Image 1 (cartoon, protein in one colour):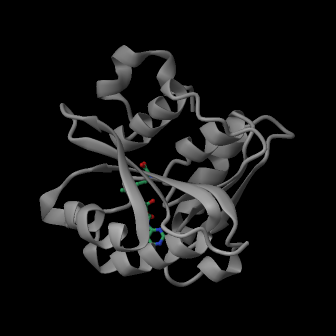
Image 2: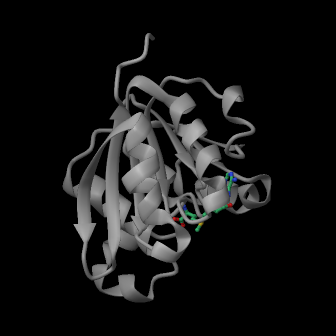
Length: 186
Ligand SMILES: C[S@@+](CC[C@H](N)C(=O)[O-])C[C@H]1O[C@@H](n2cnc3c(N)ncnc32)[C@H](O)[C@@H]1O
Protein backbone atom coordinates (compact mmCIF):
# COMPACT_ATOMS: atom_id res chain seq x y z
CA UNK A 1 0.00 0.00 0.00
CA UNK A 2 1.94 3.01 -1.23
CA UNK A 3 1.31 6.35 0.44
CA UNK A 4 -1.66 7.76 -1.51
CA UNK A 5 -0.84 11.26 -0.38
CA UNK A 6 2.33 11.17 -2.47
CA UNK A 7 0.41 11.93 -5.67
CA UNK A 8 -2.61 14.13 -5.00
CA UNK A 9 -3.63 14.06 -8.68
CA UNK A 10 -4.29 10.35 -8.44
CA UNK A 11 -6.74 10.75 -5.56
CA UNK A 12 -9.88 10.83 -7.69
CA UNK A 13 -9.04 7.37 -9.04
CA UNK A 14 -7.60 6.13 -5.79
CA UNK A 15 -8.71 2.83 -4.30
CA UNK A 16 -8.57 4.61 -0.95
CA UNK A 17 -11.88 5.95 0.29
CA UNK A 18 -12.34 9.68 0.21
CA UNK A 19 -13.15 10.06 3.91
CA UNK A 20 -10.01 8.21 5.02
CA UNK A 21 -7.84 10.28 2.68
CA UNK A 22 -9.50 13.49 3.87
CA UNK A 23 -8.76 12.59 7.47
CA UNK A 24 -5.11 11.76 6.68
CA UNK A 25 -4.72 15.03 4.76
CA UNK A 26 -6.36 16.94 7.61
CA UNK A 27 -3.95 15.46 10.16
CA UNK A 28 -1.02 16.41 7.95
CA UNK A 29 -2.25 19.95 7.28
CA UNK A 30 -2.96 20.58 10.99
CA UNK A 31 0.28 18.94 12.16
CA UNK A 32 -1.68 16.75 14.53
CA UNK A 33 0.89 15.28 16.89
CA UNK A 34 0.61 11.52 17.32
CA UNK A 35 3.94 11.05 19.11
CA UNK A 36 3.46 9.07 22.29
CA UNK A 37 -0.32 9.27 21.96
CA UNK A 38 -2.58 6.33 22.64
CA UNK A 39 -4.72 6.02 19.51
CA UNK A 40 -7.55 3.74 18.38
CA UNK A 41 -9.18 3.55 14.94
CA UNK A 42 -12.72 2.18 14.60
CA UNK A 43 -14.13 0.47 11.50
CA UNK A 44 -10.70 0.75 9.93
CA UNK A 45 -11.36 -0.98 6.57
CA UNK A 46 -7.94 -0.70 4.94
CA UNK A 47 -6.36 0.65 8.14
CA UNK A 48 -4.85 3.61 6.32
CA UNK A 49 -5.74 6.15 9.02
CA UNK A 50 -4.33 4.05 11.85
CA UNK A 51 -1.25 3.23 9.78
CA UNK A 52 -0.60 6.94 9.25
CA UNK A 53 -0.97 7.53 13.00
CA UNK A 54 1.51 4.72 13.74
CA UNK A 55 4.00 6.08 11.18
CA UNK A 56 3.71 9.44 12.92
CA UNK A 57 4.69 7.96 16.28
CA UNK A 58 1.35 6.94 17.79
CA UNK A 59 0.79 3.81 19.84
CA UNK A 60 -2.10 2.61 17.70
CA UNK A 61 -4.79 -0.04 17.94
CA UNK A 62 -6.52 -0.56 14.59
CA UNK A 63 -9.94 -2.22 14.88
CA UNK A 64 -12.76 -3.56 12.77
CA UNK A 65 -15.11 -6.51 12.59
CA UNK A 66 -13.30 -9.89 12.57
CA UNK A 67 -13.85 -10.40 8.81
CA UNK A 68 -11.86 -7.27 7.98
CA UNK A 69 -8.81 -7.99 10.09
CA UNK A 70 -6.82 -10.10 7.65
CA UNK A 71 -6.65 -7.30 5.08
CA UNK A 72 -5.71 -4.77 7.75
CA UNK A 73 -2.98 -7.03 9.14
CA UNK A 74 -1.52 -7.36 5.63
CA UNK A 75 -1.55 -3.59 5.17
CA UNK A 76 0.07 -3.01 8.55
CA UNK A 77 2.78 -5.57 7.82
CA UNK A 78 3.49 -3.97 4.46
CA UNK A 79 3.56 -0.39 5.72
CA UNK A 80 4.59 -0.17 9.35
CA UNK A 81 8.26 -0.97 9.86
CA UNK A 82 9.19 -3.43 12.58
CA UNK A 83 9.21 -1.58 15.86
CA UNK A 84 6.26 0.61 14.82
CA UNK A 85 3.43 0.43 17.31
CA UNK A 86 0.31 -0.79 15.52
CA UNK A 87 -1.77 -3.70 16.71
CA UNK A 88 -4.86 -4.99 14.92
CA UNK A 89 -7.82 -6.23 16.97
CA UNK A 90 -11.49 -7.08 16.57
CA UNK A 91 -13.92 -4.52 17.95
CA UNK A 92 -17.62 -4.72 17.20
CA UNK A 93 -19.31 -1.52 18.38
CA UNK A 94 -21.56 -1.91 21.37
CA UNK A 95 -20.24 -5.39 22.06
CA UNK A 96 -16.48 -5.42 22.57
CA UNK A 97 -15.57 -1.92 23.68
CA UNK A 98 -15.23 -2.82 27.36
CA UNK A 99 -12.39 -5.21 26.51
CA UNK A 100 -10.45 -2.04 25.61
CA UNK A 101 -9.33 0.64 28.04
CA UNK A 102 -11.26 3.90 28.32
CA UNK A 103 -8.30 6.23 28.16
CA UNK A 104 -7.43 6.78 24.52
CA UNK A 105 -5.98 10.18 23.63
CA UNK A 106 -7.29 9.96 20.07
CA UNK A 107 -10.23 7.97 18.70
CA UNK A 108 -10.39 7.98 14.90
CA UNK A 109 -13.00 6.93 12.36
CA UNK A 110 -13.48 7.46 8.62
CA UNK A 111 -16.82 6.70 6.98
CA UNK A 112 -18.20 4.79 9.93
CA UNK A 113 -21.43 6.79 10.37
CA UNK A 114 -23.65 5.29 7.69
CA UNK A 115 -25.86 2.60 9.27
CA UNK A 116 -28.55 4.07 11.53
CA UNK A 117 -29.12 0.91 13.61
CA UNK A 118 -25.45 1.03 14.64
CA UNK A 119 -25.54 4.68 15.82
CA UNK A 120 -26.34 3.94 19.50
CA UNK A 121 -23.70 1.19 19.51
CA UNK A 122 -21.12 3.49 17.97
CA UNK A 123 -22.02 6.26 20.40
CA UNK A 124 -21.58 3.95 23.42
CA UNK A 125 -18.26 2.79 22.02
CA UNK A 126 -17.01 6.37 21.57
CA UNK A 127 -18.15 7.27 25.10
CA UNK A 128 -16.23 4.37 26.58
CA UNK A 129 -12.99 4.61 24.58
CA UNK A 130 -12.38 8.35 24.61
CA UNK A 131 -10.26 9.29 27.61
CA UNK A 132 -11.25 12.16 29.91
CA UNK A 133 -9.13 14.60 27.91
CA UNK A 134 -9.19 12.63 24.68
CA UNK A 135 -10.29 13.79 21.24
CA UNK A 136 -12.40 12.01 18.65
CA UNK A 137 -11.94 12.72 14.94
CA UNK A 138 -14.62 11.47 12.55
CA UNK A 139 -14.66 12.02 8.79
CA UNK A 140 -18.00 11.42 7.07
CA UNK A 141 -19.69 11.99 3.78
CA UNK A 142 -22.90 13.77 4.77
CA UNK A 143 -25.49 11.38 3.34
CA UNK A 144 -28.98 12.39 4.45
CA UNK A 145 -30.38 9.03 3.39
CA UNK A 146 -28.01 7.26 5.80
CA UNK A 147 -28.92 9.47 8.75
CA UNK A 148 -25.37 10.80 8.94
CA UNK A 149 -26.48 14.40 9.49
CA UNK A 150 -28.79 13.39 12.30
CA UNK A 151 -25.94 11.54 14.06
CA UNK A 152 -23.75 14.65 14.01
CA UNK A 153 -26.48 17.25 14.52
CA UNK A 154 -28.54 15.55 17.24
CA UNK A 155 -27.08 12.37 18.73
CA UNK A 156 -23.39 13.15 19.20
CA UNK A 157 -23.84 16.72 20.58
CA UNK A 158 -26.04 15.33 23.39
CA UNK A 159 -22.97 13.63 24.81
CA UNK A 160 -19.93 15.38 23.38
CA UNK A 161 -18.73 18.88 22.72
CA UNK A 162 -18.67 18.80 18.92
CA UNK A 163 -16.95 21.04 16.37
CA UNK A 164 -16.91 20.95 12.61
CA UNK A 165 -13.16 20.97 12.01
CA UNK A 166 -13.24 20.98 8.21
CA UNK A 167 -15.73 20.77 5.36
CA UNK A 168 -14.93 19.70 1.80
CA UNK A 169 -17.82 21.19 -0.14
CA UNK A 170 -16.95 19.43 -3.42
CA UNK A 171 -16.87 15.99 -1.85
CA UNK A 172 -19.53 16.72 0.79
CA UNK A 173 -17.14 15.34 3.43
CA UNK A 174 -17.08 16.79 6.94
CA UNK A 175 -14.44 16.22 9.60
CA UNK A 176 -15.69 16.56 13.15
CA UNK A 177 -13.75 16.88 16.39
CA UNK A 178 -15.44 15.82 19.63
CA UNK A 179 -14.50 15.85 23.30
CA UNK A 180 -16.33 14.81 26.45
CA UNK A 181 -18.52 17.65 27.70
CA UNK A 182 -17.34 17.28 31.26
CA UNK A 183 -13.87 15.80 31.71
CA UNK A 184 -14.52 12.40 33.30
CA UNK A 185 -12.53 11.34 36.31
CA UNK A 186 -9.35 9.55 35.15
C1 LIG B 1 -17.62 2.20 4.87
S1 LIG B 1 -16.42 1.25 5.69
C2 LIG B 1 -15.14 2.41 6.04
C3 LIG B 1 -13.81 1.74 6.20
C4 LIG B 1 -12.63 2.69 6.46
N1 LIG B 1 -12.77 3.40 7.69
C5 LIG B 1 -12.47 3.63 5.32
O1 LIG B 1 -12.68 4.84 5.45
O2 LIG B 1 -12.11 3.14 4.28
C6 LIG B 1 -17.16 0.98 7.30
C7 LIG B 1 -16.33 0.11 8.20
O3 LIG B 1 -17.02 -0.02 9.45
C8 LIG B 1 -16.99 -1.36 9.84
N2 LIG B 1 -18.17 -1.64 10.66
C9 LIG B 1 -19.48 -1.63 10.29
N3 LIG B 1 -20.28 -1.95 11.31
C10 LIG B 1 -19.47 -2.17 12.37
C11 LIG B 1 -19.72 -2.55 13.72
N4 LIG B 1 -20.95 -2.75 14.16
N5 LIG B 1 -18.65 -2.68 14.54
C12 LIG B 1 -17.40 -2.47 14.08
N6 LIG B 1 -17.10 -2.10 12.81
C13 LIG B 1 -18.13 -1.97 11.95
C14 LIG B 1 -16.99 -2.17 8.55
O4 LIG B 1 -16.46 -3.47 8.72
C15 LIG B 1 -16.13 -1.28 7.65
O5 LIG B 1 -14.76 -1.61 7.71
